[in-house]
Image (cartoon, rainbow, N blue to C red):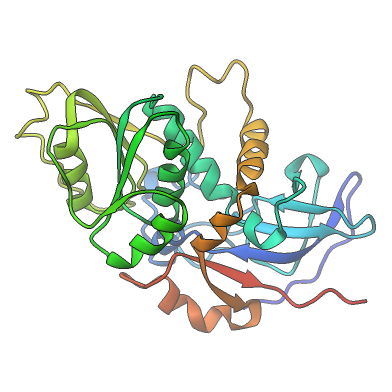
Length: 306
């Protein structure tokens, strides 16, 4: 934990007092371990990051707070800290019906929404989602909303069955019929998961890679059905909008839609732990450890002064 003096507001800025933030485990683990590849460090900076990779940096992008003075609740792509200054255009108002604690899922929902767009999934499709972390569960949740879609979430961790059931998504702990899916979304962050995703894809199906693997090689089994089935392996990264939406959609419009998609109270099942901000430094090694249990950790800040 580092202390920092709040500077006077510059013209146009407002002060935000943080109420909640959240760990984005996959990305923040790679940052914590110093595994952001050097050639793309500038591209992978968080919007309000301070410092340069590798760790330590002031990092994070899932903050919810209240604007000082007018009391409006807002979401910001901002690091974990008690208070900050921002321009109004960098803040997204919380929609009615989205409580501040649940709103910390907005950045992950935005990633999942972008992945669904990149997948081209439509009504009636058979859709497999490999990896039941927060992003995978949100992608499965969105896919299950497509009329007539047959969606299944696949993860070897049986603990992911409960949140999947809470969201109304069928769950399996191992892949089903090979070559049966119209669309496969991979979000496990592992080479084994990617191999399962490719095996599940049907003839000329699309496999969307939502995981960010960081530095180091990732083996991809391209010697089996990949070529005979003419599979499409597509990357999806939230830093860019899909090409067909760029003429009409902005990053802000997409983030506002992600917040709007959080009205469903069933999504509270994805927040499996809550921790005080003051306790975060001691807890980070446990929370970001490989195989750490649970899903999203919500970080609770000190109550506002009366």
